[in-house]
Amino acid sequence: MVNGKDFQKAVELINKSENILLTTHTRPDGDACGCIAAMCSGLAALGKKAQPIMLSEIPGWYQFLFAEQLQIYDENMHIETDLIIIVDTNSNSQLPKFDRYLKQNDKPVLIIDHHVTSDGLGDVELIDTSAAATALIVFDLFKYADWPITTEIAKALFVAVSTDTGWFHFENTDSRVYKVCSELIDIGVHPARIYHDLYQNFSYQRFKLMIVMLNTIRLHLKGRFATQHLLWTDFEHTGATYQDTENLIDQCQLMDTVETAALFVELKDGRVKCSLRSSGRIDVRKIAQKFGGGGHTMASGVHLPGPLKNAKQLILEQIKEQFEQLDSE
Image (tube, rainbow, N blue to C red):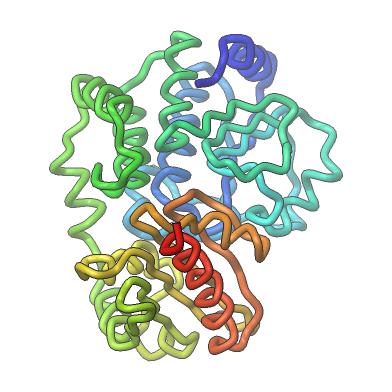
């Protein structure tokens, strides 16, 4: 848990700032989007000018959290701010191009994050690696500061927590998650509506992309490790976007033998984005960190050099090594 002194430092930073820039990691997920939406609403209620700037497009199914289209960061844009708040990451590698702005920046930086991977980017940092989602820390900040949690803020926080816990079926779903979500529901959140907006609102193009991906599934290591991939040309053929890949990796984990899964997405620049998932025994964060990525023990990601075949082999070797260690114990 974050201690009270750090919360107080964060509140003091916010209180003395008028123009506040908020951002998060590239390819923002539900936790990132929910935290940005909640913080923007809360800051606006305090009379602050909250300026959300994303580093890449958000998936369409999170757009309902925002009244307007979000700005995408451009190195040439003019930014006036008294404070920068970064949520759901503390790593330069997840802030492409914006990390250069941070190095030249002379304004204070507030980090709110729950990941173990850290570059120590903040002047003040609210870090809680035991939190299932960054939104739980944002919730605690609102409580500490005695800021009102409106229905809109509660909805954004619920989206953040529910997505980072896999709609409450991941191992990180603890009593703290249920307690906070219970309070958010009491404030006015409607889980059934949110579930529809998140999981029953996908495009036909995303389904076509998923079919392509499912046809690439291969099992390794006696069925315990599953791989699947997408080529950059698959997006052109299906009409899907890169954002449509979010959570597709979860599909092969429905198989009874699969303990670990990897989704490899070929990028136009030749690199390969690898998303990793584990049911618990394999620590995929260690693998991602070895190649410059990061994340959680059971959910991590990393960019690898191409070609695709080589990227797959790199990860297979690491997964195999961990399984061999476990089997020998």
